[in-house]
Every structure is written in structure tokens, then in C-alpha cells.
Length: 229
Image (cartoon, rainbow, N blue to C red; front, side):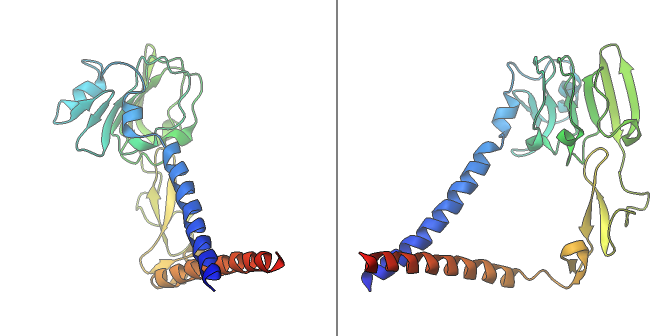
């Protein structure tokens, strides 16, 4: 009996260990503020757009401008010899981003998905503004840079339900050229068709029950192996 309990306990610990390892791997794969702010040498360029923006009460650390300990409000990656940009997600609260003077030939619009507060984006002249010119109030080309200023709301004028959002949902901006549909209050589920609060207790009960069932199956399998020997 003691051996069976030990195997059962081991199975539960094993499953939770796997979940923790998977979560740790996911977190480690995400770039941190420190990695992004020190992606290239030096600090925010003096008299640059990000530098002037940060004078109004921000704190400069590496190539970033912080307003507090968490949010990056300005990001200056100009003249960093970057040939490609893959993930800037940790700076999604940024108001201004400068990527000028880099040999970047192509960049996905998805890089700035979730950048709801982005108002000033400075790019190499070869790149287009993410979401197209219609996603910005003003687009200005000056020598070797392109300025995308004043991000427009991708939802309609009222900010209510867009044509692409299902009933019982509200259109929310999600970066230049992007939007997301959030369920209205008291609605949840697929296409926001379920009314009422999200059944958190029921979901947790199902997940907990699934873990117990898998653990029992592992325990039964181990018991059979023990009896077979």
C-alpha cells in the first residue's frame, strides 16, 4: 500500500514538475527589459527624439526611457546596425520608438501588435509605416527616415462593435492597423455567446480532475508493472 501511495504521489509531483519546466522555458524565451535596453552599445542618443521625450520626467537606462520601474515609454534603437527586428513585446507600452539608421530591409507589422500607445515611430525610409499610411494621422519622409505620427484607432468612430466583431463584443484597438474583439460585460466564451460570469471554479475543477485522472492512470500502470515483476 505504501508503495502505491508513493507512486501516486510521485506521479502528481512529476506532472507539476513538467508544467513548471514548460512555463520556465516559455518565460526564458521571452526577452526582458534589460536585454532590449542593452541590445546595442551606448545610451539613448543625445538630442534624439527619444532623448527629448524623456526630458519630461523619464529615466534613461541604456537605450530605454522609463517612467517607472516597469514600463518602457521610449525606445531608441537607432544606429544599432540592426538588419532585422523580431520581438519588441516588452516595450508594448512605448509612446515613441526610433529604429532609424539601421539596415533593416523588411519588417512585419506584427512587431507592433499590442502597441496601443505608440504615437511616434521613426523608421528607415525604406520601411513603410505598420498598418499602412491610413493607420496614422501623419506620415513624413525626411531624407533617410520615415516618421509615423499619431496612431489611429483601428475601430470605428464610436469604438463600439465593428463589422468583424461578433455580437455582444466591443472593438478595442490593438496596435497600428490591429484591433481585437473583447466580450462585453457579463458575456464570455466562443464569440461571446455565453452570458454570465466566467465559470472559473468549474474550469479549475476540470483541470484538477484531469490531473488526478492522469495521475491515477500512471499509478495503475506502475502497479501492473510491479505485479508483473
